[in-house]
Length: 360
Image 1 (cartoon, one colour):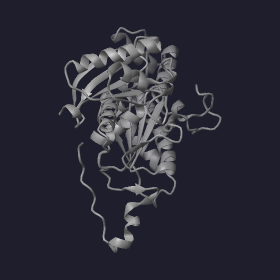
Image 2 (cartoon, helix red, strand yellow):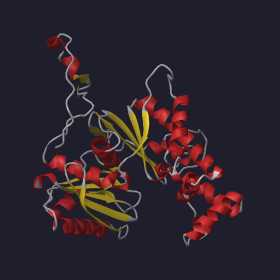
Image 3 (cartoon, one colour):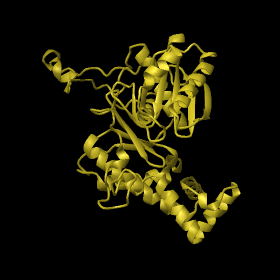
Image 4 (tube, rainbow, N blue to C red):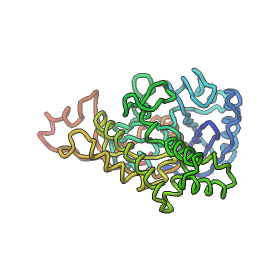
């Protein structure tokens, strides 16, 4: 079993979460600590220490790291991280030298998508788009059992597709970006404005914050989703409006990628059907070719905040063993041509059997 265990590390701007993960995606042990600072050396030391703690309990054979930011296609270098002072940081090699283990580095959204494809909501789907709704919008694509990273390793920045020309200003420098209309920041922005204006909805939000010992001016999207879950009509409408914008963006992605399933994760997904039901309705209304094509399923992610470390560990484990998991969707492409078509001359029309799902 020793060669089937790996450490997954999920690095965020405020916390580092790590765990030992087995071949079935189960977390056997977990650690969490605050991200020490934006200093690259201190973060590196924290990764080394937390990995050493887990290795003292389990004979792990690889380390997988999921980090927010742009990761090069070799899965070795953090080209740019918005939360940490990493610019062209050779993270894989530096961690490998300290831990003496094989190391893989990938974008945190890729790690989450991989985990959901392997063990969560997207099992048995060949083509998956994962969308993470937090302060902004992140995303990742899995095509035929492989994360799609793009030509430079930076695919999946879905939050910056334009959905409203000349719309709200975005931190990226453009206007009308999707994440300005369909992310947690939308609810936070609206909640804080209502509290400042002392509207009836603002009063309810302020009271909720005060029950938590928070300054009412610090209300955020989580307070809105909690009010909505409790049946507050105003909060429910706000969440539904975000869901509608979510559906618009998903329809755009379907036009480009045509996935079989969208997996929606991140903190805002806690709103559940209050968010997803209006998203599905808007998706259908805006889908190109609607009525004449199959629609993707839109579902909530299953693995929650642990998805990143599970996915990073699994990718590292598989790479260390130099094995690729069987594609549960059953389609295999060879240089853009299906394997079935390539064999058509010898199969005489016989349909190839779909491979069974396997665990490595």
